Length: 129
Image (cartoon, rainbow, N blue to C red; front, side, top):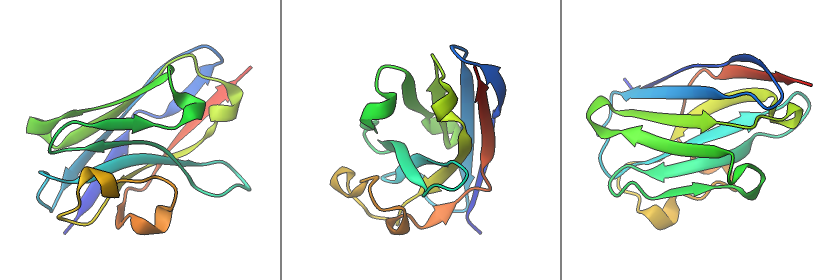
C-alpha cells in the first residue's frame, strides 16, 4: 500500500521559513519522480518542485527559485521542501506526490498534476503579512 505522509506545515509571518517533510512507503523509492505541489483556495493545483530519487536531480518553478529547496534523505525514503523568505502568496495546502515506477528524470515534469500517481493528504501552509 503506497503511502506518502507529509508534515511540517504551519503558520508563519512573511519572511519566515518552514520545512516540509514527506516520507514514502509501499513502493520502491529508487528511480522515482517525487514532487511537491500546492493548491490555494479557489485555484488549481500547481507544481512547485521535483526531485528524481535515483540521481538527486532537482527542479524548482520560477516563482519559488532562490527561496525554496527540495532535497531528500534516500536512506529514510523522505523528501523535504525547505521554504525560506515566505510570502503571503505561498499560502496553500502543500501535497507530496510520486510518479509511476520506472520513470526517468525527463518524465518528472510539474505542469500536469494528473501525470502524478500517488498523493499525500496535504499539509497547510499559511503566510501572513
